[in-house]
Image (cartoon, rainbow, N blue to C red; front, side, top):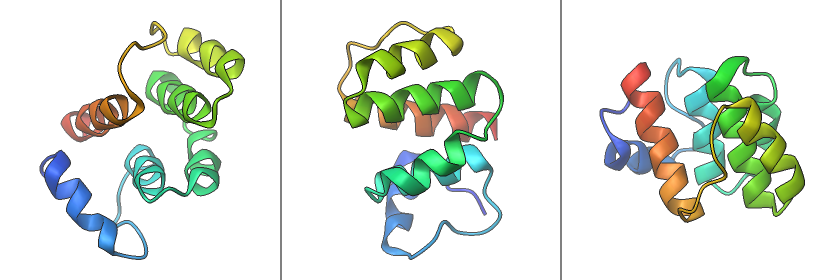
Length: 100
């Protein structure tokens, strides 16, 4: 079962894996929230489309690889954000939850 909002999503982080049959986008964001960049990136790089590109961009921004992040933001049709990483992570989770 999917969390209903960002707060409920964050409450799932006590577990060792994402709950249930979550879409790849939400699983990638879950691993990111657990500070497991590698697991998150492994999922994100296989997610097609704009949302996958956005998550991929966010992860490279978080990694500090701005050149690569800017490439993925362009592919996601998004400007390089002025928000904090925490704010963007929350925005991504909310976006994915609304679309699921």
